[in-house]
Length: 118
Image (cartoon, rainbow, N blue to C red):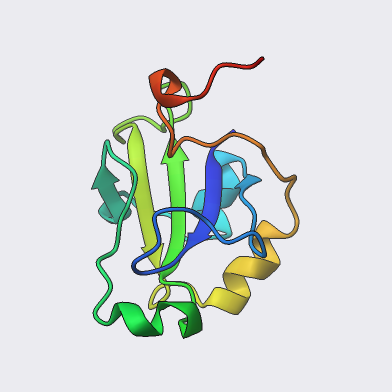
């Protein structure tokens, strides 16, 4: 299932208070409002911070969704999508994400960058 999580400007990693969830593609589209126009690219999103000193006080920028080749609907591209908070409020995103299971999957880290299990 797709990885979906809130993201912040200036933050490459997710906050522990809003862990990532596995959300079915249909729910990403129907409940989160994911659309093809939200496509960002093949690399994880990084939203440049307008003022890094305020990063710890900001609300989330939006919801990042990672779709693999096996998950994308016909006509869509695999990769990263970002639903901005102007399209989906942070509170609404948290309500939807909270209905789905948490995931330990971390697509921000490429498989070759992961530390080996010891």
